[in-house]
Length: 363
Image 1 (spheres, rainbow, N blue to C red):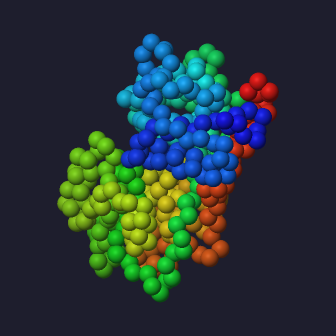
Image 2: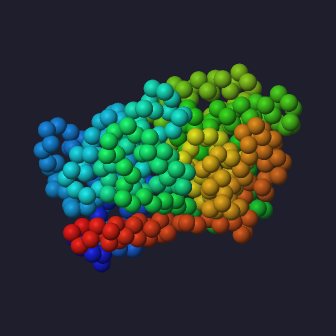
Image 3: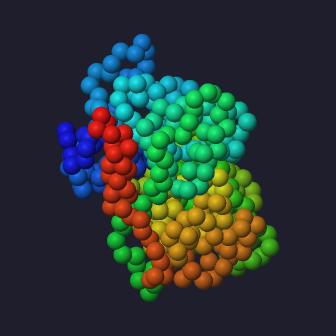
């Protein structure tokens, strides 16, 4: 398989996990790249074939591959995930898109293990893609802080922001019907921002800042293993006078419809380094309230008019304002929503061409 570049285009590997956002994103990008250059191939791959005594996987590997990596997707623990990526890199040239980079919010037990994992992955990769400048900053910090000799950033590190998917035109203001809910989009897990939104709505009730306390809805299901914590938060919200419910899994069409009917879109995740939930809100035509972390301020600069950043302490007031002024939750006509999926695909093709030139004719 050869394309127009100096070396064969990489085969884009995915793991076949329909329920995992990172793997779904890998397939989405791969299809967009192949639409531009049909020489690109998408192939199902099981990292477990890399375990054991180093024997070759059942299917021969191509000379170059691109993968999307988060330790939670590649192994039962961070050490196994890193070992599998290293084993792949011993057999073929690997470029990698990193997700869920380690942060202090991982906690004192998990953070050192995840840091070591990502250092190993970066050292094994020929090129690294980050989904934001904030992630590139995190990557520089984690690679420079590593005690292991020889660990270095990959020769090429680029930022390719998550694209806004195409979702069609948003409803006209006169035809919009609100469901009255304050909505958080995406998988539920502790730290995603659901608790912060419940606290903010409870504050509205306690301070009598709204005539009717709006329900909070989680658009999506709980991540595997976090169902009990979702139930606990539902009970806690009830004790505070707030109704919290989860829609469970939503198809793409249902997610779009619910995103457009929500009264107030909110993202209250404070430790995020890239957010597919944000691009889904933007695709729906919404202008979500976001907390003014480094990532969301970066996205506000990249896509003016698509978010409303606020300080965490101001979240209750921002929700109250949005309930009273629903137009503020929709993008203006001059909002900037690119880069889109085609931009993302072309950025990947440019990366592989650049790394070919850097590696020379032997690549």
